[in-house]
Image 1 (cartoon, rainbow, N blue to C red):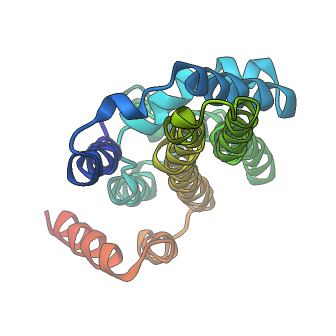
Image 2 (cartoon, rainbow, N blue to C red):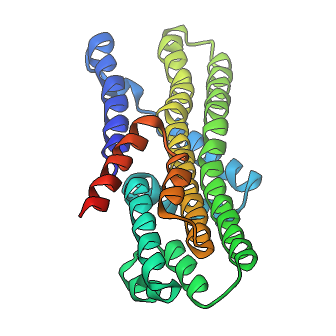
Length: 264
């Protein structure tokens, strides 16, 4: 479970609620408008279906799981494993990798080792894994695009709701006493649209984009690592090659971990 995603959303919505207490005296009822809610939520989903597809919208629950429940990407641990596998292969040969396949949870990593053990040449291995990587990137882009699109349509639907509310109000100018509440109700649609976009859809879209970048980096490290192992590169050369993918602070941590493992 991603505590940053959950905690961030709670903080954002609690902040919004506190404003109701501070500025509105806790009058949440003034912000309740079923008609505006139906227009903004239903209109946003409908417009997203038009712009993308029904399949994309139906996939929202599974995409949300990736935002809230995805496991932390183990980049450092993966590099350590690749370097250790390289040392094993230098001593025992490529076929020694067969014994570790079942111990690996990541499907991409497992497939990479399997096709190397099966005897495919480097060009074939790269072509297969690059294709898998491209398909993974495409899946992540689709999930991100759904919420980014909803974040674009939400505020616009809110404005449409506000305009409709003002039109209905102007059609009933014969009752001036109701103008204040009517104007307030009209602007609730804009509140719904802007808040849902900026406190829900767009943050989730940003998180999904980050998830995609992290997973792509991990797969890229696995690809380059497996190809280096297949080519018989020195473990030290492999280590330097893979550490280059990491930011300086994490690079130092992983490097120290590898030095400790090498002494054992």
